[in-house]
Image (cartoon, rainbow, N blue to C red):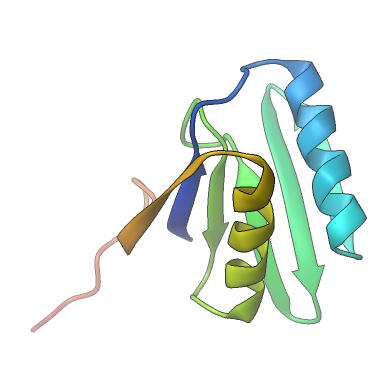
Length: 102
């Protein structure tokens, strides 16, 4: 997964997860969410999935397999309500390997 942005700053609690999940579900049909040690929200549109989760950071990160219109829509929606930092270029998750340039 590629990290496109990170919510900054945010509350680090269960209430924020519920608020964030409800906000995204109100904007995007096909949203699923859960909370079990980490917070996660998946926005699915056909074969495209955008994740907003805390799996690799204390802050919620916006991730997807590749750039696309759904990623951009999710980032723009979140930016209307929450401060966030966009990464340009996007970052690879720590466990992902960089492409071989050879």
